[in-house]
View 1 (cartoon, rainbow, N blue to C red):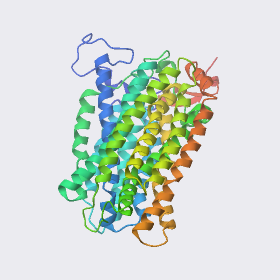
View 2 (cartoon, one colour; view 1 turned 90 degrees about the vertical axis):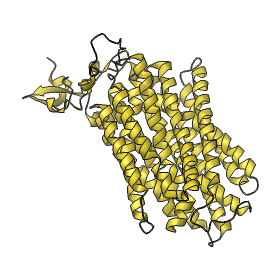
View 3 (tube, rainbow, N blue to C red; view 1 turned 135 degrees about the horizontal axis):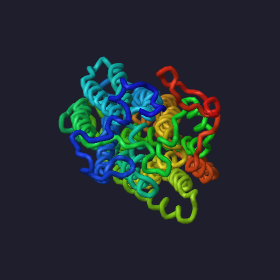
Length: 501
């Protein structure tokens, strides 16, 4: 055990070294890379992480796919509907730093195993909520965030410890394909199962069973890689510093901070659209006379199905085009990544605005503009993660990912669904189908404004990206950063200068 481990031998089960050898494997049986994971095992690991990420986002947006049924079932307002997403994101956001801290210090595979198992059980429990207990649905949806926080903060750092440079960008793009595709599948599965079963509760019972499969795959396929082993300077050459020292360093990293604010805008827009777009499209169809109002327990959720298909396709196109454009521009400038992210947000803003405006007159035009807006919006998912990984040193990446999750969700999608719902309720002058549509239409226009602001943050990131990347690649601890040395048989953190002779 290294001197930087914060605890003694009693934590061998959770330590990074607990998987140095595969159970039952003979020495020299399989040639391994500097990460400690073979090439084939690394690819399988990315595939498993992709599947789990897909499942997480599929579950997250199943609720949005059956939101009209939930509103009708519980008799709740737009503000209360927005709380379903807000309580989940708040739980996810508040717990991310805890898992980020653990992920930088302990075995990441076992942390994810516990989190995903808990997530599957709570998701199943949320499907048995009785009609007079909306608070119980809010509680269980909040607890779902525990499992997702244990995974989202850690999984990208595992990929970072398996690949470097262009291969890392490609594998991160594969991993982040799961966000739009999983989101789209959430709408599709939610609306389809609701229509087949005639009960929205069954829509929430699909992902728990798939979660059990994810646990088994994670247990038997994924192997914990050595932190920083594939990079020029592996982890044993970079001693861990205290959490306060990590946060102080991250706060001075302008590329990390500005890109995080830019990603916050992305979270605000995607969070608002994810929950409200299907409902808005349904109300627009009622406004134009294409569909009758929902008066039964089983509403017409075909708009959720169509929006889910659009989300899947635009996600694949957006992530792929973002990766390809970024790789092409990197040959000309090291500022390519933040510039592509800025372009994606700035181009999405007018198309999303036009989609909201044309909803009252043309369904076809609305879907065309949504298609274009979501494609440009999806361009930055993998790129933002890549920026974090190459401007932050390996021993701080889980903490950095957790901080980015907290800030982007706190100011982004933790409050945006609720905010859109509250604004919609406040603008509604009377309880009619006309005002249900009009109030939500105006409130959703806020998304275009936020997208423009986010594009500005990514443009600012481009000013600092080269210097911050060089500092991370050539990082050496300062004399004032605390390291861990033994003291009376226990680990104690002291400044470097106090042990130099």
